Image 1: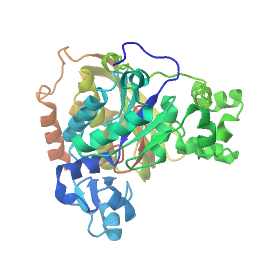
Image 2: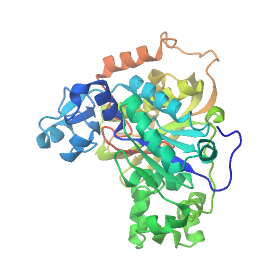
Image 3: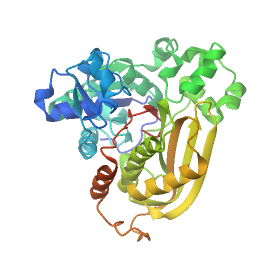
Length: 402
């Protein structure tokens, strides 16, 4: 395995599990194979939302964000299952362990995606990047009964773009010598960093493809997107090197947050609280994984006209779902009178410190096991797993970082 980073002619992979949540559920229950399956919020209610679906359900037209009632109208035999987040995290770690057999440069992107720098491994294993990618696909299929799509390229951006081009269970290569020919005619929204709002702005000035984007003036991009715009252009021109992080030395985050853009406007306080609760679960899990607590919480609300309401508040150090939800809803109640539609919600915990520090809290149950807190929240609110990277009200997640 490589001891030092190879800086020239890099070979980067992006591995992405196909239909992760639904695929994990099917891998655990063989009787679900060849059946349309969806992971949903509260399978017992037709108003629950589709969080994820397998390829068979997708072929019927089942879409993320539909209500269960809508999905079953077009796919009556759809099998709806509750999510099992602890299981997904366990499988995610097993995936990473497989990847670590090939390189120490493994950088997770959410539970189901990872970048791998296999530059040194190509020499050590005497294999091309594509051969390593194909071997990874076979190993994951054999050992975890899941399929992955793998992109192979010279940069993180183009490796991820390659993995998105053909799904499920494909290896797609974008060589450096051909990257412009392969990608510049693709829609602008093919790349991470161009959301619906930016896509709409670019479309208004007839910028619709990646090739159109890289032709733009740097000063124009900087005014529109800040430094992110000019950096994205450099990435798309193949001029900027963003290394894959060393898995064993990934620096701790300065803040941890998650946000969603909704597929329908929401105004009801209880609906907003459900989304807040889901986001708090994701933030809490990441904080627990990093062994940190946060003493500042920031809430950001955006309406359909892109007006933003935001407030940060100091709190007692915590990584508890229950406390995060409570403090977040206090801020929501302060910011918002629930009389106009909300289109996006984001939670961020900052001022992070080691979770070894004793938490001072007025809650008697603060020291309870995380899973116990989750159980209590579910008991209080019902099965509120209304969201995931694809969730109730959610069209896409903007946590990047998932």
